[in-house]
Length: 359
Image 1 (cartoon, rainbow, N blue to C red):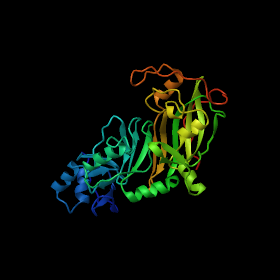
Image 2: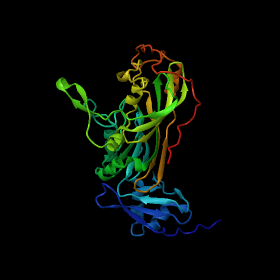
Image 3: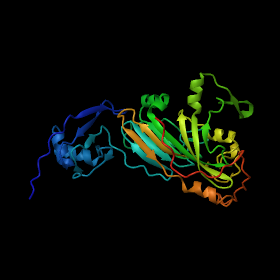
Image 4: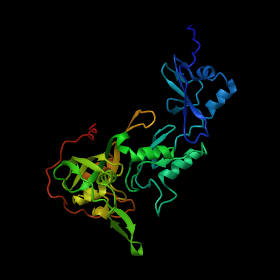
């Protein structure tokens, strides 16, 4: 029978301050040889009793890498990182319109479905991604806070980044281009884009102001051209495939945290399907056919590269095939589509995944 060696003390334990922990720090331990979790912790946390260590495991204070565990005999390999957190780690968030893709002491990255607003607005205050996340995190740590870094409209879907401290939110918001290496969207637009590959220039910088009788009017903002460009967003597009009256498009956001894709495609007379405010003839879809499908982000603290990808929604390909025959969410018959709004068409281009960011 093979004799099991006693686990060696971790090499170079590291203490890291984290937001919302009342001065308590995250303890990061590196495993030097193969073993199991409980014996490793008993040796690494020699100042704590066996009962206390077991309680830490039971109460979800322990993670292997970024994955929480309560398993005493969880296998460890040399080089693994075991983390002892200052507060209990939340269980998985279960929601039909929200999926947590990544979470650590500093960030939360989620995928939100269409129909769920990112943050509160005049009409939507209770059911938002921000509120759902905040309530979930506070159920495990009453001091937990979360702040949105980017946002998506209620009727679109995609990847949204949240920070767990105001300082980190400000850093990411002000230097979005420094940390984001690639950001792609997929959309279905009405008509054909000509050329089939090109650049979407930022629309004229504007801000919303309320005029008389509560109507919204547009007013130019002040500020440097560079600041306005960063806010509006510069993007490139590429047609992936097309039907006689619609096109499936991959978009790469090249500059800026906030995109204006709906306005940009409307300006080309190819509105995004479902965006009836911008001229789409599909008024009964129940959402806008725009989705964030790829985000590559350099972690602002650990410098780890985080890559998040989503497949093209099956609905988008269905929109190309079944024009005018989609079932509406409310059982109403969809409005008939009109002919192409773009100037010309060259037919479908080769299908493929979104192109990688140029860095």
